Amino acid sequence: MKSWLPFEWIAAVRFLLEGLMQTLVILAGIAIGVGVIVFMSAMLAGLQANFIKRVLTSQPQIQLIPPDQVARPLRTDKGTIEAAIVQRPTQRVLSIDQWPKIRVEMQNRPDIVTVAPTVSGSGLALRGDTNRAITLTGIEPEVYFRIVRVPDYIVAGGSQITSEGILIGTELAKDLGASLGDKINVTTAMGGNRILTINGIFDLGNKGANQRSTFVALRTAQSLLGLIGGVTSIDLTVTDIYAAETIAREIAAMLPVQADSWIKTNAQFFTAVQAQQNSNTLIRAFVGLSVAFGIAAVLIVSVIQRSKDIGILRAMGTKREQILRVFLIQGGILGFLGALIGSALGAFALIVWHRYARQVDGSELFPLILETQLFVMASGLATLTGVVAAIAPALRAANLDPVVAIRG
Amino acid sequence: MAEVLKLEQIRKSYNVGTAVETEVLHGIDLAMQSGDFLALMGPSGSGKSTLLNIIGLLDRPTSGLLAIDGVDTATLGDAALTQLRGQTIGFIFQYHYLISAFTACENVMMPMLVDKGHPDAEMRARAEQLLDRVGLSRWRDNNATNMSGGQQQRVAIARALAMDPDLVLADEPTGNLDTKSADAVFELMRQINRERGTTFLIVTHNDDLAKRCDRIVTVVDGRVA
Ligand SMILES: Nc1ncnc2c1ncn2[C@@H]1O[C@H](COP(=O)(O)OP(=O)(O)OP(=O)(O)O)[C@@H](O)[C@H]1O
Ligand SMILES: [Mg+2]
Image 1 (tube, each protein chain N blue to C red):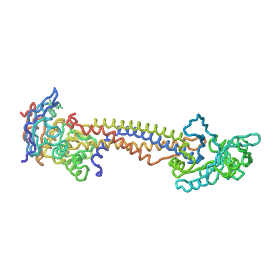
Image 2 (image 1 turned 30 degrees about the vertical axis):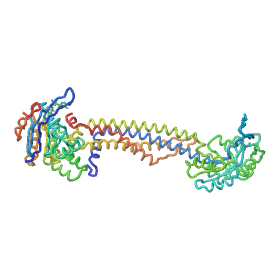
Image 3 (image 1 turned 180 degrees about the horizontal axis):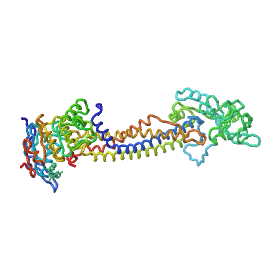
Image 4 (image 1 turned 180 degrees about the vertical axis):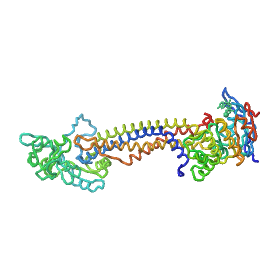
């Protein structure tokens, strides 16, 4: 008996050790439950982090574009009603009004990191007798590449863009039969036409993007798209990615632009994450519940088995509260130890799974995220579950009639 | 001599308020002085255990006066009864009832541990001393249930003495032992009574042992005969 332990802890530990088989079986049960939760949560967090990382290195976090063009029918006389069909106007490629001013304003905001004006529109890439529709994006590479890390995806050549140069995707290169240094002819509906040299070829990991995306210098795009001196969007990154939507709304309210945050443009992803989290919560709740029932069942059996011990303890002056605590502590210990073992199991499974589960290209399926917070939370919750599950058995033990217990 | 125990017109009914209500004790009067060594006898079912449980504050009488060390217990609540029981009464049961999760020495320490909350060296020393007194020093680290019946009962005696109680209640302490062990256990209690002046109330069916007590009280059908 350790002198620093109070009676209740000593008794709880001894009772658990004496019923070692029962204790081990229920510990295994708790550990499996906690392990599943830890594994699942960490893997989901990893997949989510992976997706977010991917989104955030290939999309602006906020994009400012010109406001929707709305038709406003003229009414001459007040009170006269006109049966008019107002058609939505076609959305021409327009420049953002006074964009240099907006750019400066954005650069001055402390919550915004990068400001990259871009011009984009559609065009046609021609080489020999083939042509392909492309999206032409004019950029200032030094800032734009901080938002979309094209240099990371370059598979041939470099990411420098000369005024007569272009970066194209692997699919487009294949379709046009072009390779690094070849020249392609780019035309647009606005009558723009330039011969551009392929400075680099990239692979964004998405066939559609590799077919359509092209990057040219800002000025080149401006002249091709007939928007001299104008930009069609201002792309931003922010300090806190989860505040993007709030910041976007703030900007939209302040300036004559439409501001779309990555949270809004990836709404589907967030709905999916939410759905996954909901089902995750549900699974956790049920695992927790079955763990709780397991602990309660084991302790109820233990109370019955130990009724004579409890009776004799009461006869020698043990208070009801002391008996109550002995059993609550047993529940807590079971929950806590089960969680420790379960966390280790979950982490182990995660490491193994992380090593063997690969994507088609051999890269990891999800980053290994083992946050202490997750384990602390799991252990805390499991301990709490154990204590709560022990309430009914503990009350039963505390209210045992010593006369009946001793006679029995 | 101080009056350790006083019973006046103790009645006990079971299943009060139901059709099967039965009165088991019909007004028991009994007094014990400090240092008494009393045998409680009577046929099976006469109410000896019921009476002992009431005296031991494990059960309450339906009516009547029960005073321990001059304290009327009728007005005491559950917690106060538990407290009084721990401080003043030691129990020895027929089936020895040591707690199997602990060693012999720890079982003897248990009443002190429960009282103080934490174990300490003093407690252990006292438990070892008591074990020594009942002749079981060698067995102190033995698991409690890993001993013969007579040995276990001697540990139970040591445990009953742990809090230096004013009254030790023994319900057929030798009922489950062979003659030789029974004799040894009884003799041990008798000696402790003489050495320390501990008051003993012993339920027994054994006439020989009863004769060696200071006084015999016989209960028949819930009345002192
Ligand atoms: N909880 C109870 N409910 C109803 N009747 C009870 C209860 N406990 C004891 N009795 C009855 O009370 C009477 C006295 O029982 P008790 O155990 O006190 O007898 P005893 O003298 O100790 O007998 P023995 O010598 O066999 O131990 C018996 O008739 C028994 O059936
Ligand atoms: Mg009896």
